[in-house]
Length: 81
Image 1 (cartoon, rainbow, N blue to C red):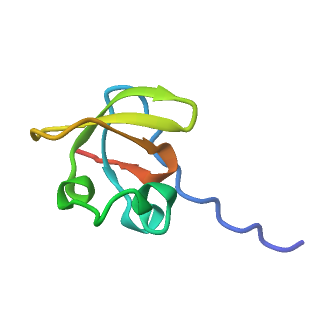
Image 2: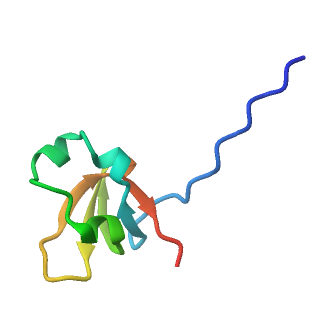
């Protein structure tokens, strides 16, 4: 019997209140990336806080004087602080 492929590392489930940052690789080329000139540095640095989740999208608030944004959950990664 062949060895099974190793299971991918479990990702921390994202929920309301989670601290996150944008995964540059997942964001680049997406519909959301085309709506902006360039990825602002604070999105990739984090932390952003998830305020709400609706379907595949999360509303994010950053610790800066910028508007809240909605991004797909698969474009986010949890920050371990």
